[in-house]
Image 1 (spheres, one colour):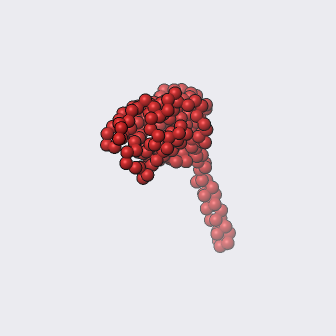
Image 2 (cartoon, one colour):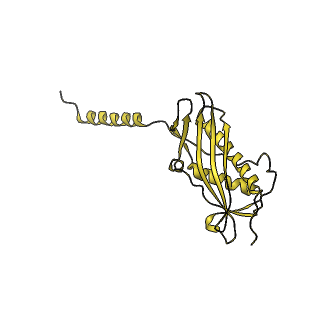
Image 3 (tube, helix red, strand yellow):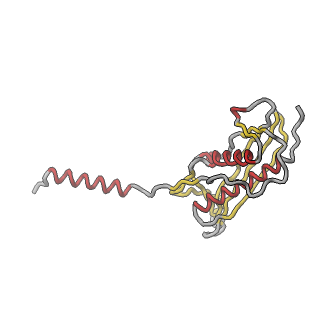
Length: 204
């Protein structure tokens, strides 16, 4: 007995809708560093640079995407794994650049971008080596940030220093990792300000 045409159309439409629902995975959750609250403690010394150009941070290509990465140190420390349904709002290199600029500006330094650079204004370059959530065990992790800061005056390198900070995650998931990485980035910003306060720039 042939199936009525209208019933065939209805069956095909139902199959299409069910297939569409089945192929629709979980909605991704997006994270950033949150608001930049006032720094808990001001650096011991005031930076010797009243005006500073901060270039956008450089780093490996995997930090120039919105994926959130973690490492299972207890299983395979050499493998970096992305979370399936968690993302950064903005690539980590941009997040870190903006956070450092905000923290330096909060300390009273006038922060310029490379497009606003003027002759004689020192330039700070940031090269990021690591920015990831590391699991020591299945239930314990920390956020780790490592970078190299180079201060230039004209074409002369004034000084260069490597900074590394880790902070415990409040939970063994992407949310805990995002909070820990934000705290580690803020700690590096404080270290960076202290370092800038120790430098002597050449006289014009």
